[in-house]
Image (cartoon, rainbow, N blue to C red; front, side, top):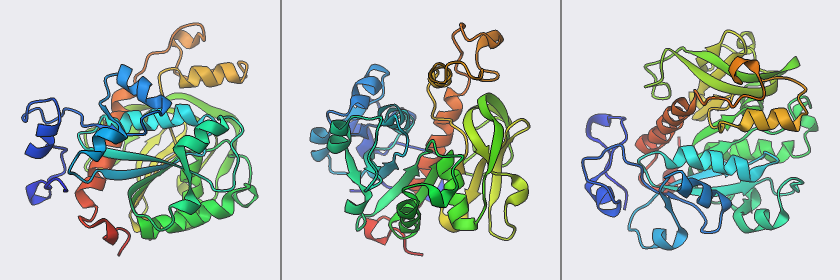
Length: 335
């Protein structure tokens, strides 16, 4: 069963009476979170439960008479457990039930995540080619300085991006994944930076009335961690691309790509408080993330000034998926 959409095309998240009955909240608590459905043994489950995110296991979900949103994560990051936890956190904070599925490149072997974890929780894309998803999130990858065609899994990633146009309702790409999508769909190349863009930077909300940016302040903080960039001057005209957020210091952040039902985010609103600090330690202090450590002192614990911004952005995206995805999932991808 699919929860009834709001009348008159309203976009704000809500709980139907049926959803309220299955959640331990009163029906008028409209912003109360609804469970994210993930595998019972996924390590992210323990982390999210400790943070108060309502997590639904496969056993409980099987008893529910409701179609959750099917959201797949194509996780290209080396530390897959950290990334899957971060994405599950922001999706689980929304008032809609989400079935979270983890995908991987079919022929690529991860060197930084245990093979047992990959085998238990990830499906190769080659196994899901006939399935339909309400949403697909494509992460970044540490290959920013390599030409796209030289990335070992580029051919399969290009096929996945094409597949998303016929089997996925909404696409969300992150960091290098966003650059790769713009290159594949629009021929926009990236530029390697002389020094890494790393830190927490103020960004301008360039389109506050759009569904993606609604609720975000005129200026908001976003973590940044990348060795390359896409430049506004390179964006092709007459393609419908709309710049949604920019930074005076690090350039483009968010682009709406309606022709491909995609939102491209070059930065990291999903990051944890300590993610940039962990990267700083991993890289043995090669650079200090800007505007991140109090007083630019790496010994000081950073303050998270972007958490709410991340929840708003991902909440807006998942709500737009819900409001516009076909009732019949077999119709997903039809123009």
